Amino acid sequence: MSRLLVVDHDVMIDGGQHHDLQELFAEANERYFGGGVRATIVWGPARRPRRRKKFTFANHYLRRRLIIVNRALDARWVPRFVMAFLVFHEMLHSVCRPRREGGRSIVHTPEFVEREKAHHSYARAMAWEAKNLDRLLRS
Ligand SMILES: [Zn+2]
Image (cartoon, rainbow, N blue to C red; front, side, top):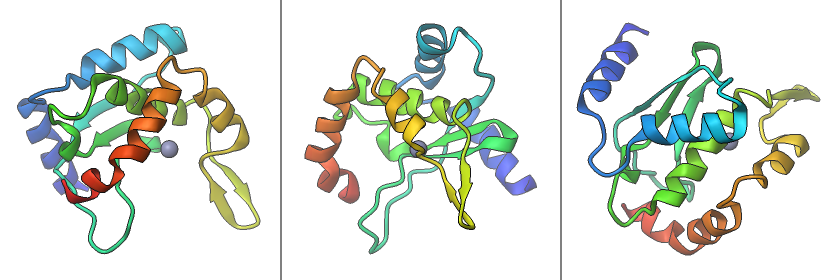
């Protein structure tokens, strides 16, 4: 636990090169959540997938109200609307909590998926992700 805190401290000092998570968080909070989401959002280390065909955009530690974003996304070729949507998606997790179903935890509940579509860049962000997944996996 203390090791993670040290990492967080480093990334908070470091900030981002291309995308300002604090600004994106504040914007989404005002526009979609009435300023009601309380969480800390930071850049974590760049994490590249190994073998798995899955790119981790961010990890959200709900109990600690901590969102750690994959630093591989802090790049010029990643558009701002993609980051805006990602930050919104993570914030939505603190509003739409996971549900237990048959011993499994469902994070993207039907309610979550529905509310996610309210984001102004939902369709654009989804299309960008689908088109750039290969590049993300290699980034
Ligand atoms: Zn999610």
